[in-house]
Image (cartoon, rainbow, N blue to C red; front, top):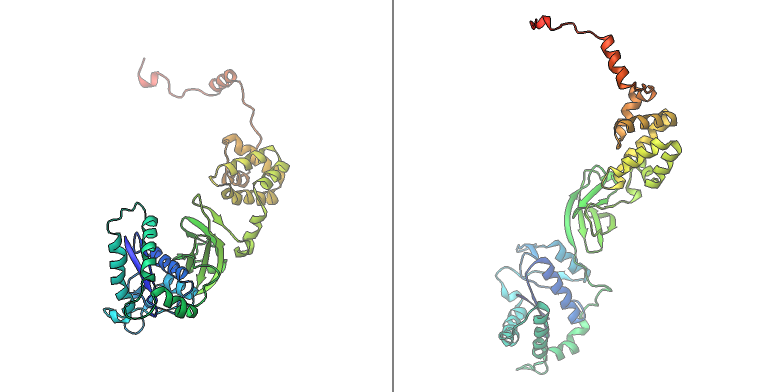
Length: 357
């Protein structure tokens, strides 16, 4: 386990929590819980130069991790990392780590815990004793000095705690959607082929272009491959598709004829996701506008005679080649067909030709 220690500079009032790792989520969660325990936020944070907090440690302009910086802004706090190998920049926390090691961690060295929450409950009990322990060289304790002199100067907490967010980059695809965690979210079509920043929380997906938010979606959960599409993001030529659904396509096909109805149902059922067949059905509707209902019905009948699951391309080919206008040839009896075939044809080369005598 890894132990996070946060200390207020004047009262030495401490906050301690154990985590399973030192990852980004643990680091941000520790700060959120610390501010909740203090009942307010501080104007300045002076952390170590760990990667989850500081991406690049420089003497004059350190680069703060984007998520950490966002969390600090949420609590109206400024992050000023300690200089590398300069423990005197944060002497209070350096000293408190030694105190916590003695009065909290060493006191729990023989305790057997079976979960992180169980360990943290034991840590809180020991921490209460430490914060209430009287000072040796001055009056009061960490808690009493904090409540009387330091807490009034803390900043008020926001209405809601900071929600952990993850940032990623993505490219807007040609269908004006971007893919995040195997889910697809629409973006205004003007940003096609542009790289954008995506901020993800558990509930919301936000898309930014050059630090300006261009759209947001409720985050999709569950089966991969789902789409969240806003009609306003579509080009004008695509908006007409949102006015149609499977039932409306089937109803339209039933007005044309039974063969067209069967063909449309076959097109819709041939895709794993029903919406994938809408484009083909819409194209079939446009063919009906061009050729008329009679030819569409005849073409669907011809296509169904070839296969029980026709597609749009086969119907389009039948119309283009005029096969829908050809009349069906009656099928003759097999006996008469065989006799007529033998009568109308003769073998040019017989057995004599091949030397059989």
